[in-house]
Image (cartoon, rainbow, N blue to C red; front, side, top):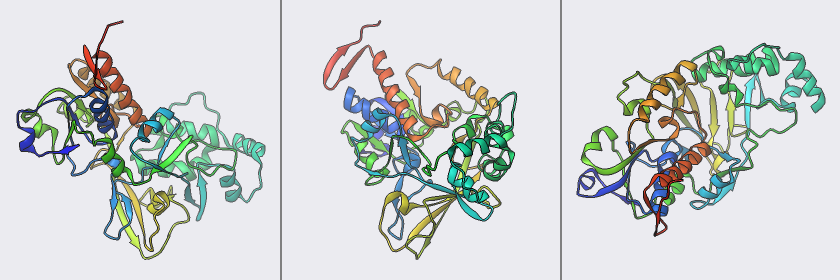
Length: 392
């Protein structure tokens, strides 16, 4: 990787690919095109750092924090984990979350421990199934996020754990949101307190930023930060474009803006070794923030102080979460159809495809995009050897 400035980029260099966005979506495909196909890449980002929303760094107290909120890597995809393992060693880590409900901390996702503690019971797994079945509401159709939860665990638990949290997170009642939002959260009848159950759960040993530095270290990758695509695109010579920013922005919002939720992050450092009973606490009740995370649980760092981040969802700000509603999906479809008419421009990532993806899904999407690009190259160079593509 070679860092360059605007004047350098305006020189006579012809890049094979201009890639917009130095998060997972852009950096993965940049690395593949440079290392496997010997393509000359210019990777740009409007921020002053790489890594996208996973960017981490040491704060003024010397504590490793995630600038844009906690990012815990987890996946069942071995090929994704193996790919990233080229650029980092891992610290195995299984995330646990507590919810503050009725003045006490209980595990979330809801499991056997949650119900027994809340209701002062001593149920086993079979009895837990019967308990939830007695609470569940039978519905003819499952259309919304509210329907998903109420049909599984009933209205009382829905009100306690999901309704308030979801309204804060999305600015909408769960009855107004697509079923996929709460379908992501399981309910368990065992005592598994882990938030995720994926095969691979780990944190990059040196942090995400260090992993990205290794990923884009190839000499055929040039990096330009503080670079807005709209401001520099006409000054750069390139053959093809890979765009990981908001797809509606690329098209100047010609069909209107795609809605997103944003977050304000407030950090607090305390002169204590730890302040929370676990890494993340969810607040589904009256607090204005949705959750708080104590970073030292995630990183394993030893320090006499600790830093916690509180998340306040909001309508304005950087786009973090595509809002899953039918009308938004239809609006995105218009942009997707328009994108399909443009040659040599590819859209990928959460913002480029308006999908609520986890990190591993973004990596998998960009690995797939690389393969698709190589299949359409009339003549492609892989690891220094020329290969002529023969259509099937």
